Length: 99
Image 1 (cartoon, one colour):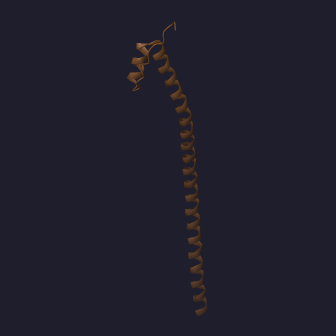
Image 2 (cartoon, rainbow, N blue to C red; image 1 turned 180 degrees about the vertical axis):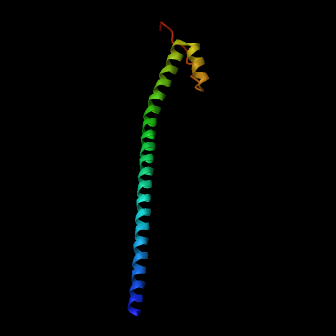
Image 3 (cartoon, rainbow, N blue to C red; image 1 turned 30 degrees about the horizontal axis):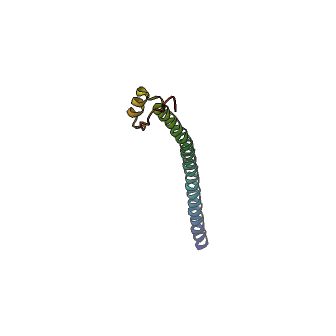
């Protein structure tokens, strides 16, 4: 009976070890999936930032062009629009038609 009892202990430890392995595999799978989701979110944010930088350059060029047009034509309506959006165009003197 002693041998059967020792075998029962051995089986118990194997069963506990197997259960522990299964739990750890489950945790590993969960962490892997979570990591994949976080990586996808990070990739989306990086892409958004890159696109925002490209659009920032375009936005700056457009604002400069409108500000130059405002200064060249002395257009008060455009100046008001720019001022409403927090952009203060410099009031450059209007060039004369004849030198």
